[in-house]
Amino acid sequence: MFIEELRARTKEDHQQLDKLLIPYIKGCNTVAKYADLLQCFYGYFHPLESLISAYIDDDIVPQYSRRRKSNVIEEELQSMHENLHAINEDVPLPRIDNIAGALGAMYVLEGSTMGGKIISKILAENLGKQPSDIRFFNYYGDDTDVLWGQFVQSLNMFADELEDAGKGVVISVARNTFHCFKAWIEYYYLQKASGS
Ligand code: HEM
Image (cartoon, rainbow, N blue to C red; front, side, top):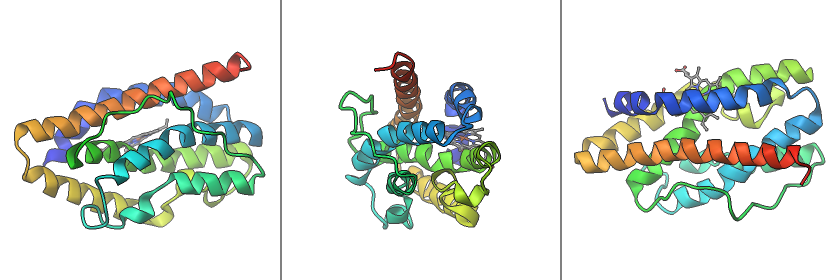
């Protein structure tokens, strides 16, 4: 199955992202720090979802419209009376110019809901909330595994029709999606630390 190859080829990228993010997640012990974390995710997910939308629809990935996660961040920040930061025009983003690339990037965004199960528990405990109150990181709730399964199935079906070069595009865009997100998080928190 293509998913196994993709998982193996991005394993190290995922580990590096986890390593960078975990201290920020564990350090989220105030609503203000939690809002910063959400702004950080919004700054990357929102423009990336717009790039993906040019190539993916509900026929390619079931329930695609429901999978746009940055809208939930907007709602969550609003409910916390936090203003949404404008998107930084220099945010690093992977280059996406076909369905294969869009699926590679989507693999990373959809996969984040798996890590979200752990992240939402840590955040809920730190902030004295229920995991269901942590909306973005627990966005699919009890449907997480089903939605992930459907995504993996569409990805595998699409990859079955691809030559090696096409599969290579999915992998390289997925890797680049991890790398750009890591670069964005580093930039975002460095900027915060310098007070700008
Ligand atoms: C630091 C917090 C994170 C932790 C602790 C974490 C942990 C995990 C775990 C345990 C899984 C496997 C779940 C399972 O098989 O049941 C997983 C899957 C995945 N996560 Fe993360 N994750 C984190 C953050 C992220 C983020 C921020 C992204 C992307 C933006 C991401 C992308 C993925 C992907 C793509 C998969 C699917 C791998 C596969 O099965 O093919 N993760 N994560």
